[in-house]
Image: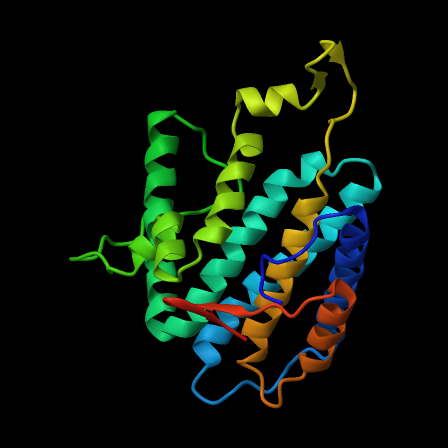
Length: 251
């Protein structure tokens, strides 16, 4: 079964939660070792990829915690971040060291913007925080655009199906009419203290992206130690989740 052929019902949402718990346990098991054997020549990429993967895992765990607390709707911004991090992680591993350089330059650009904003706002010095503007490169790394424009990255990977829920979730990240209506029963104009509607598809999408991200990080580890956990998560979810590749999808 491919990534987007599923029934978004409550039973699948519960299975997605279990799959996320399996991936969380895999991170904790790997992290408890303190170090891993990285595929030769992939060390530079791994140091960045691991942090992103761990972030995706913990954010996915947060989605489950919020859902079980009756706050699934409020987890929407987190889900959106998971979608983006998972796709960019795939691009990072596919592209290699050049992508790491682009991420570093993107970060430097943001530091310069932050310092400029602080100056314009006359922001007082923060004790213990010292930050200086990185030098501006003579020419921009063309790969920086891949990080800045998520829509183009999705197009490059033939992942428009991923960009659809990303755009949908944007309505809950930014102040919009859709976000405001989540707490009002439109037919009766009755107010609600909790968000209305089913957010089950979001946790299913989260589990799928988490499995993809784990497959990606596993490529960088000698012996593929996460393979068993990935298989267990896919079995729990009830589908095999393929990776995105430029122009096509593959398992």
